[in-house]
Image (tube, rainbow, N blue to C red; front, side, top):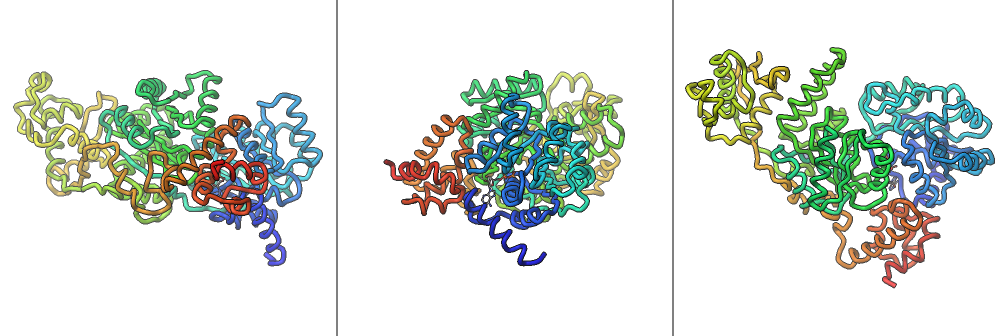
Length: 624
Ligand code: ADP
Ligand code: ZN
């Protein structure tokens, strides 16, 4: 690239970043991407949630002639995104089915007359002949295809309308196209390239790490109580999402939290459309709402200050888990991903796969994905290393997950494993059919159950052979043996446990077994210890993360700023973060600027916002 051409583009991009968005420097690869797109190149951008994808097309749209067209499947969000751009002084609008005919007509007039920098469009609308014809008559700065993984038929968010977007390459050969997604795997990437005709696009991949998210997995005991303790002890008053596998469980859990005084709302596909949009709108706009949901909730979420994501059931793959937990902490402030999991999850997920009438090849893939998810749950190593490794990224222990903060003990579990395997073998041999885990554990613990007497299992040599190990510990052992393939649970036959090929070597003493020691599951285990660990405040996860690290006088200013913002947002009918992000208010509170010059140095305060809110902010800081 000739330097003479590049330098002015870079200077203009930096100026837009500072003046319009109020940031002093580019984040990660933003600069290279922006230069590439401004110069007319196509791009595929793979960045985690919160990585800063929006500026990669917003700034080029401002710098190139014509309007930038943003394709987004999230109709519910367009309004907020456009509101945020307008706050920053950008001429933005959206076209989707929520507009009246009159409103749409005035957006179209602005478009024709060159009065727009950015236009957000729903894909089905964009692909109408009428819309394509309209766009072909005006200069187009670029096409940005957000959530580009929606084009993937194998992915969880497939949108048939996205397939049609390949026409953009044919109809608008001169407009650069930039596809963006937070879904990382290689297969999805290839599908995006193929379906959106991005063969010549430059691919930009950043680290998928989300350092501000603290990962924790606890062993399921009394999951609702565990969840309650988790929220009460570190997240009360914060916004969060709780995922459950079924609608019934969503309703029960939301009801339970509600009884316990937590403002929780249920969300699942069984609710009518209006209720669902209300829940979504309240979550997006109000502070401190907890939504309990099936995976149906998520795609429409663009809230930067979600402080936690909890799973009461096991996600079916690491991709799903990463995408769901990724909704926490987009603003970069400390956030938590918490999951309770147990043997029933393993069995249930296996059953889903076995019972589905999918093709064998698909079932195999699903099984492999589930195994990777289970490995993540059981790993005694750093969870982040395990996650990133799954996405092909090498890393070192993070210091901000439960296993780093409170390393689990691994012990030689050969004898314990042998005891369990013998119980499986002996009970089946004595009675002629296999038994479930609970009965086997009862036998090992020498319990006096009716079932044991009936089958005469109290006469077996394994009866009472594991009485020194608690029921909870045994459950953990059974789960680990299942995941390691040392036993198999037959979901078609009452979840009976059976030996496998690999069991023999263990029984014969030829193959040692190492087990992760079961630990009394405290909801806060691995939470506090990192608090003094430095870093960018990531250690303090929990109660009012936004207040963390502020001295008392700054905290007071911050509270005043927040109150002002809440009022302002309400008057304007927009979410609070559209006015200013928490991070910006926090910096203002910390620096306590005395004049406009000092205020404009704060990240997130651009020229337009300085003009709109400068005086009131300075007054609020001064306490006047
Ligand atoms: P994504 O779409 O990748 O999830 P966003 O574009 O919403 O991410 O950006 C995430 C957050 O990072 C937003 O709060 C945004 O204001 C902030 N951000 C983006 N670029 C910068 C930058 N260069 N400097 C500081 N903050 C930035
Ligand atoms: Zn770690």
